[in-house]
Image 1 (cartoon, rainbow, N blue to C red):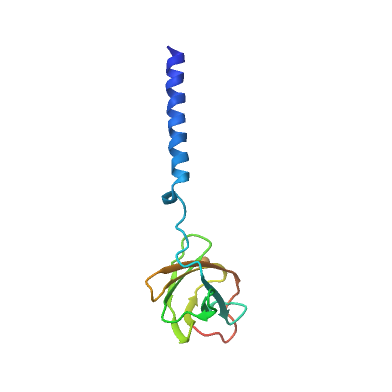
Image 2: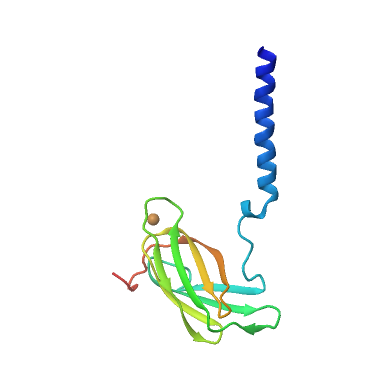
Length: 146
Ligand SMILES: [Cu+2]
């Protein structure tokens, strides 16, 4: 009787493993594929090095297949800190010239930030990239912002 029960448990565990294997094989269980892999996103922050206060995130979108700037995208930003309990900050970039976008972003605390960048292209695809912004310094003397 214990042996039967043991087999039952083993079968259950194997079933769970099979389910896991199927899950791992299915694309649905993986992170979403990159929406626009041919689009390169480069970014910088001004002032540099970054400090608490109003910063400008400068982004460029380039089509690596043609080398051409990607204009007409709608670019949004979310800034999060690496520790819990802080409200994220949001921004929307405007295109200042073809393929070059600038977004004001209020960095509210010194420390390590993570920027989530979301760009919806004219063809409707939305690419999402993450950018690390570690070591944001304390507010500069005479820095802008509240
Ligand atoms: Cu913080």
